[in-house]
Image (tube, rainbow, N blue to C red; front, side, top):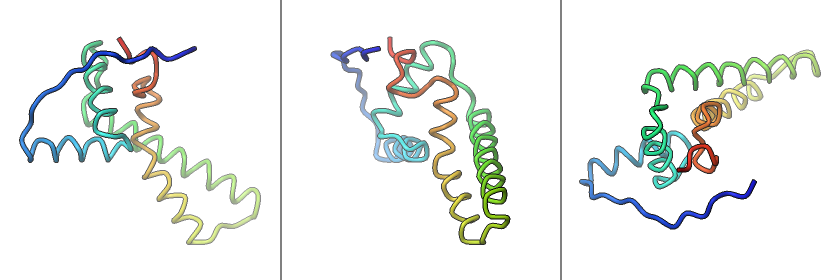
Length: 116
């Protein structure tokens, strides 16, 4: 399905401190600030936005799932796993957890469901 072309713009002014907070939220989810703002605005307009604690819980569960599945696969394949390999699995899970949570919630910015 071809994504709709975005032709309209929504903007607002924020302070340096507010911008830093928004930038931090976007970065923590692996998104640009405009992608993050779009996702939040569209989710809010549909009444689908979860609380921060709910998003955090889902992200942590998905990270734990990633770690567990990768650990099981590595042990089944090699019989053991090194500390460095385990640390790499944990770091990847932590890095991707917020983005995966948004995707699971159907809130990925380029998903047609989040576009109006």
